[in-house]
Image 1: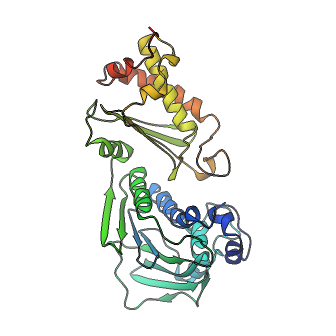
Image 2: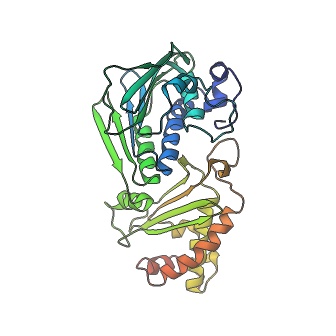
Image 3: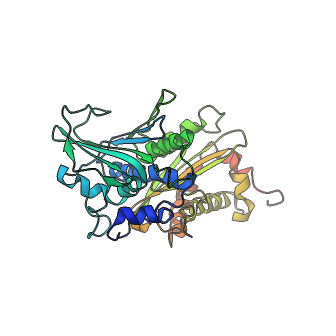
Length: 361
């Protein structure tokens, strides 16, 4: 879908076939108009080009996303808004917003894009995906939502003639902002519901380890700090954080870059197989003696893989199941020895070893 080489007349193409670009014209597709922009902010944060993101949901059903991002020149602003800035270049070149911004704008009834750079502000406005005139300087310059030298703000209203659902799920977008702050450590992400006058700021410089701690700090924990691993394979970074609690509630969150892989996939299977294998080695049992359902009791786990977008291979047409060839085996081989070494003297180990299936001794 997005990120591919796009043909000419992109605005018309997107409006004629919206499902091809955002999935559908229901709740799923509506929220992806925002996810596309948040994904670009994540990529720029990972490269050190973004430190603040502000996402606002208006009472009129509008979305405004501000990011302290790299910017384009005022002359190129209209070209980018219509997708022309992306045409003729391979994916991944140029400005990170080129391939994402046009879909959100094309499927809007009205939009406004502002850039701040070099002490000036420029704006382009549009209706039904098409810009109304050229980009113009804004005088006097408006203050940015956060103190910064440069930034981009995208403000749009989804088109009611295209989408069957127009109401954004505030809780869903808020969770997405929380995830972004954890997956791009150091990034400050603010979410505001302007209709209710509510604003939340997330800043998790400790990344997934800090997030796992936050998710479990109100529960009785079996060990004081999350079990954390961070390593690389074939240009990919693999991070996981695991925290066991005394209750039986379990949560497993998995990501490929900023994409939530709700059916998990190779990265999660590699971690679970490595943990079960380590417990088997420490106990002298087989891996089958430690079924995941028992090992995961009371566990909050976060497993994230980050790397070039072209390497994020998924099973099927959706991005719910990560299927990068060789990743599961690579994670298992790297992680199992690390689990064995850490768990030898770890306070959670007795509880995990006691979860072997009955009759397995």
